[in-house]
Amino acid sequence: MRIARYRIVAALRERGQQTRADWVERELPERMDTDKHVGLLATLRLDPADLADMPSP
Image 1 (cartoon, helix red, strand yellow):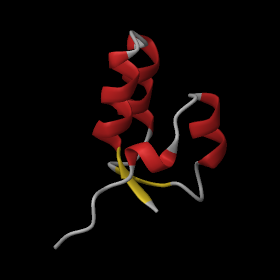
Image 2 (cartoon, rainbow, N blue to C red):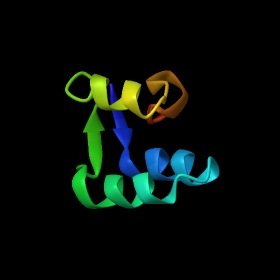
Image 3 (tube, rainbow, N blue to C red):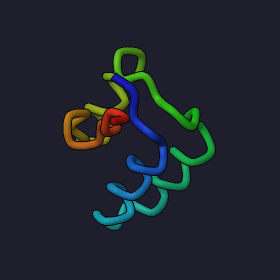
């Protein structure tokens, strides 16, 4: 599954985690592979299913 970086940043900013959101913007690729970054998502307490890109019609 792939997640757009902006979705992760937005979720962190909604929780008031500005520093983490800034770090994600600098360090993660624009489209993140959840298989490769599962540990990071767990650390950030984000559920990939809530952030997943919607499939194209």
